[in-house]
Image (cartoon, rainbow, N blue to C red; front, side, top):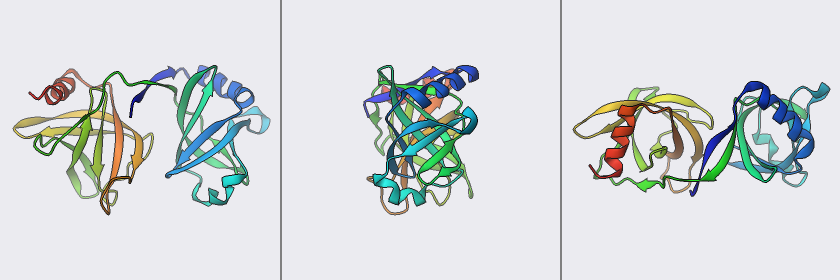
Length: 220
């Protein structure tokens, strides 16, 4: 991926005003949920309270896979800016139209300043995550100063878009370093049976965590 994201709108009132504006001004958007990409547009919720995503009629035969409580990512353009936010399905207004929870922030897509570097098995870099069987390490397959991709077993740990959790970066002969991550992407593509890839970004990584990441990137 050649793009990453940066915070664009973060204050709650500003987010609320933005959602109200795009409900009238944005005519095309895309909702991604559980590997399903559904094109559509925005509409204002009843009584002007909140935002509704209305799917196009063509793909609506697949909407049975979208249920209340699911995390979704909404991509759109506003004033020439490529924006997105992570939300949650609150309910179905009508067939093919879903009421969205107010997101914490709106993000802007931008070209990645720090390219991901493949991580070979020789580095032994792992991401230790608390699972239903205790803390277990999973292999990191690529890394940058701002995020990583990790291969994991969904039977042991549930990762979904927007989830934040604390993990530990571990490497041979080095002490594990704690860092908070946010899940930005989940995919089965290229994985063996029973595994998935998760793309994550580091959230406010400590100086110790950044030093550990930099050592791997420079091969130290």
